Image (tube, rainbow, N blue to C red; front, side, top):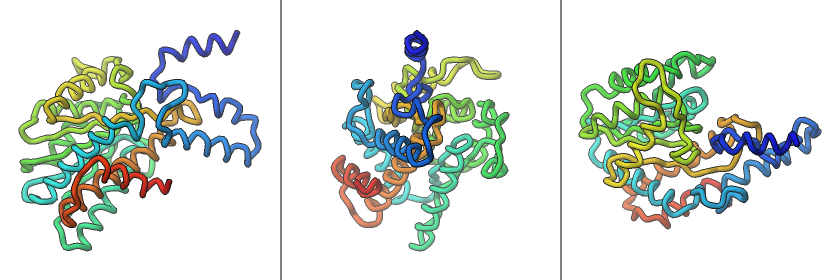
Length: 287
């Protein structure tokens, strides 16, 4: 009966917040078993279909790959015309730290090739949040918008990638809303791991909109290729709600693929196709 109640309760939860049947007994497992359980949960990232969620897009679904191609083409365009252009990655907590790591490594690669370093990162709470938890700024959409505006001052072409694994962070929602209001300058990308209809619908502080509103507007603009939503479903986390696990891994895989594909197209004349991006993903995943 308790299991039935739990199942009924979980029907209303976003995928990123559900419990995973694979890891339901992880609290009773010994260390070797825990590693095997975590390995099986991580393997779901790369499955073509999630067993109990067969209708959701996955990492290798055609629409997801095509969106990665479209975003990589925007990276290529910015790298070919770097004057007054910028690529910005932003997130809260672990997502912001991954943004920092990706920007640092990508800029180092550009520097080694004597190219302009055109990537910036934003993390809610500023650089102190790279090492310590600072949760209050994560809930402030206005702060997110102001920080983005400051970083992009004077730029005329900005690719903005907002990372929110659960499609829920107010800080990122504020930034995406700012981009949507300035599509003459910004191409916004939302990276998360829930379907759009599961994005957070609670009101945010000092805001007339919620994250779901922003996600739906992003999806609408994607039809005109003015904004993009990258949201493959990875299955539930090994530890319920810990989106820094599968979500963190998939964030790194997706963004490394997109940035490298754009770079190779710009400087090595690689042809940007879904097949090329798919093979690049395979190279990162070592499968």
